[in-house]
Image (tube, rainbow, N blue to C red; front, side, top):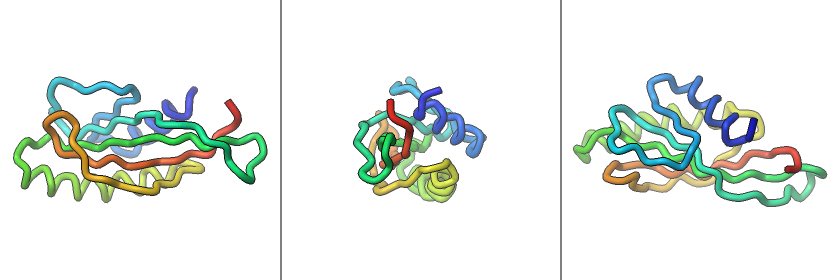
Length: 118
């Protein structure tokens, strides 16, 4: 199973009230909070022979179209998502930026995993 699918499966287990997608797809409408795990890049790990850093963007979006409700929901989601990411073996996150997923407010979180050579 790919690192992307493993990360998505772990987040799905840790966040049962969130729709977790492991493909770069935008649903027509969100009926509940949604998280998308998107592969970004591979880079060599400098001191881990035979290993590679796999970079991902984890997008979490509120299903609220009312901006005030969406902001509050995202704050609560972030408090759940960041610890769930860090519970995944070898995972770190480096940045969390405000974003849009279609019409929905979201955060893009840069996540890195240390993985075996491709």
